[in-house]
Image 1: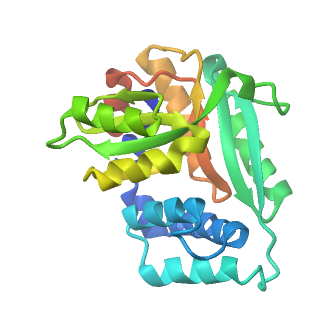
Image 2: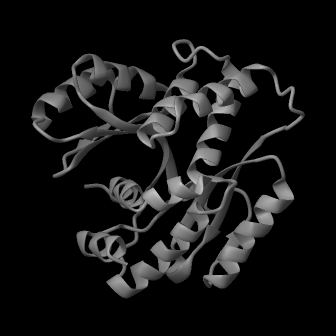
Length: 251
């Protein structure tokens, strides 16, 4: 399983508490609203909205919450709230590169909260572009591996334009060029595969492997960043080994 896929799996297994607190619904609602505001409220004609809705449903977000988020966005922002999308960059413990996709109505609040996590975790914020060059922007699709022939899935994904397919015990990860994400996802769904996650991702060009203790320090920081309301996604150059994933899941 790829590092990104392992991190996604860890978040899903530890996500019940987030759902109870409502934080994850707030984050997903913002993502849906801005997608609807930019591309309209029809998910069939708005790929970003469709992906955001799929992610919300996977997290058991109530349909009424989803519908309200769509209406809020498609209504053109009548609530007076202006959301801003920003990517912040930095280095965590042991020099691990970190990128954070942020969606916020208060840039100063978001930056202050992120900076606090970095300072408390022995990390450092970086200027725009100082870290991003170490990553490729890719489409990311996760498919339930149960009962799936990975070779057959590879053929479907490759024919649709995928870059890479990485088999795993629980999930199969598919990476695509950024502009091909929707096309590849549609091809997989039409072929009968169970897509459980689909989004834009930052993929590290040179993953960093650390021992378990050092890796846990990085993962604990990533988890703190993920918990911030304004942070939508967190990506790092850390290579999450099987041992590190198991240690994090039981922490």
